[in-house]
Image 1 (cartoon, rainbow, N blue to C red):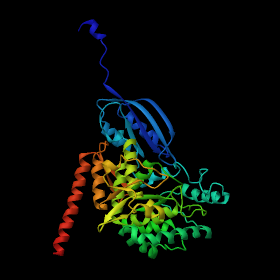
Image 2: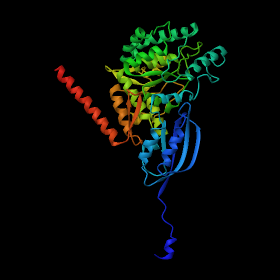
Image 3: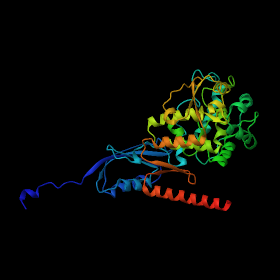
Image 4: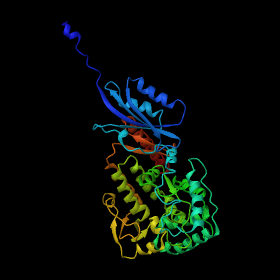
Length: 436
């Protein structure tokens, strides 16, 4: 060997610069075990920062920079870290498409606890043009109710609110006024479910139902549940909860001086507008599709999904028996717009998420355009097709047994899903044979 060859530098192991955001719970030893996962694979950490978690109550977000050797499998590292952390997100600069590069989204029902204090507006804070802005008693009352929602966590009973006589009088005015118009303008699903709510949940002009009773009824009907909220959530957080069949509901009521007007969702809008439809299986499944589509969606896609939500769940119309009926909660809880939307004055267009998601809309006046669904079943199929066109590199499935989301990003997971479908199909075939 030539003497010079002895001094030739050996080629260092090939590595790729990577970074990750790892969310962990505040438990003894968790961080040490995570770092050991890197050390045991010969991965050098070049940077580490920690902050209080944005998504997990009593948790921390760690930002790590490291060099990944060619010999180390990213999938293997991801699997190991995921067993110890609440969530793991790899950030890469290359074009490798992986589930880990998408925006964070909740995986378990308990992850929704992180949304508790992330409201955008309203709640206890009121704008100067709000009817209750100058009413100190009303503001204190809202603050009290909002605080109950702020401290609620998964698994706890929903807060009970003892409504005042003045609040019940406001509710009574809205209840009786709207009920007179539902028979002719509301969809059949709303008119079918509402008497059941009166029988099972105590809906009446003289009582504002408690969320706990209503949530139990929904869970028994369609698997949906309610969760108290302080005010308006971001579109991403609000729709992500739909993936778990969870609807965030306010508990405070609008100001008594204007019972037929509210600048934001209140308990009247939630209970009289939203709840009846969430007890209908077809509508419940359609809404669930919007939630599943929102998981891991880009900001641009979230905006389009939120627009589809606006023109369906909030302001949707549908065709039934040759007539146009209202099913959106923003219509069913507003006497004036419930009349207007079927007056022939606004423009009606067929619902198509690819077109509807691009539309613009006002939020302080009646809608100039409404979108009409042929049926909730077709709208569900349309939303599923729309979700398949989105940029995220994976599909998701909700596991109702564990109340968690499964990411279908490996062949093994997809094979298991196919096996489950085949098992269900075999059960259906056996049932048909027994009937025949």
